[in-house]
Amino acid sequence: MSTAIRLPSTSGLEVEDAKHALRTAVRAYRSARSVRQREEAAAAFAEHGVEAVGPARCVAAYVSAPTEPDTGALLDALHERGVRVLLPVLGPGLARCWGVYTGRENLAQQAPGRPLEPQGEVLPAETLAEAEAVIAPALAIDRLGIRLGQGGGWYDRALQHRAPQSPVFAMVHEAELVRESPLPREQHDIPVDAVITEERWFLIEGSAFARAG
Image (cartoon, one colour):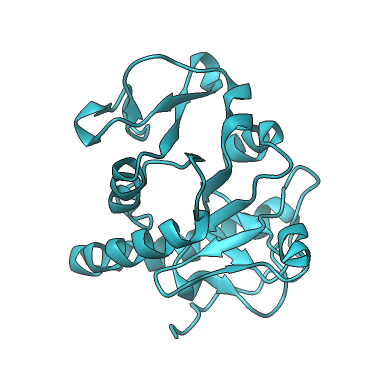
């Protein structure tokens, strides 16, 4: 099992300052990973991601940025299984919209700094309720399922539209699991139900889905 990265102490910091310090540390860790490491991990993330969502016929996921855990192989694996894959589309004013993944050749960057987005029909935020599982990006996850995001709040607001019976999976490196003190949390931060890493996938202890199992 991978050794957890060393995160700075955030004792005494305001929540946003604490999150900024943690984001900086995780981003530095990710930037130090080689292209080969990222490519090798992609297949493992895909394997565990497919296992995690099980028989779901509609899954919401995302297109990874260069230093994030690579979702490319996972998107292809789900698509090849006939799963309807929803991907974020940033509408006017960063509106929380969705599009359907039909292959890598149909992804395009709409503006500098934005992730690749599917071309075609733009679906409203409420479309997320159709997903039977949601795979969300994260920089770190603690044992309570608190997710450290990139800071824009896109997913925290988008997840308000998911179906209550659909679990939310966060995708992080095994080393980005925070096993000691909990991550800083604000009122709008929505805990995830499960985690996918390059080594495994598991339900967060105490989540509704863990209790149901």
